Image (tube, rainbow, N blue to C red; front, side):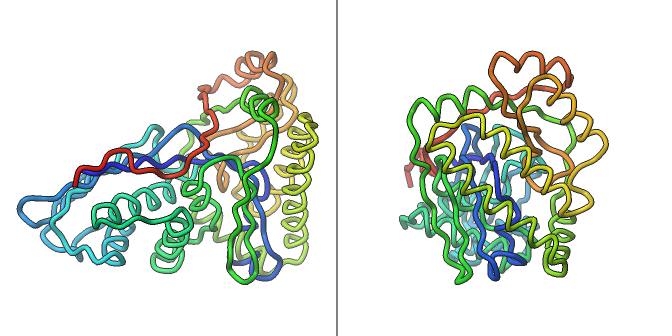
Length: 326
């Protein structure tokens, strides 16, 4: 039995600049953190030589080609595992449509556990790049690269996407006081709306590829990423709310489905109750709303929204093998 644990992520600024419709021409950057909510994946040798995969449903097949779960099938193909394995996944938070990067966290954790199953060590860079290859190139998902790197590396980081396709992950160098204050002042709510990000990301990619105005918006969002890094290093904490707000206002203009009347209403009520800024996590349309506000305003914000509050903390580590008994 082998078990991997891989963190989900919370993205603050720059999301969308990691899409292949933008960064190869302009370069991209996001500032995000891994969080203390995880996806756990176990791998165990199967006695009869078949394949069993358990996630929200259970598949039991006798050949690799019969697996319906594309990420599992593609990962096993890439790693050269034809059968004789049982794979099970569980998550701390529902893994579909929440905006926390669950699909990429699953892929990173799956590569990690199956590599260990084969007796191979893989670095964080390998986990992230292989996950991008599986999701974007082999499975054709219309997604970017930030989630894979956030889950593989962990921590609070600036992640840069260069036109030559290289990615640089730089941990944010801030004082313990700043890091703890960020954790205290961030408050997150579940909208109860699960959505697929694919259509939003497809529209956004198309819009950015054809519209110079939207390219300029994304360029500004990239600049905001560096501005937020610099302000946090100067310990100007309230700039977090201001930059989040500007980033959210720009993001809503990138594609029609990013926000909705309900989401705009929640956001406005939170601001009236004391939030300095915020955003919807992920591509948009549902999932989790995150706000930055003084801690003493959190209760008022919660009362104004009537949504389920979810406590999320920062996670310094990326994907790890928790248990190894091959």
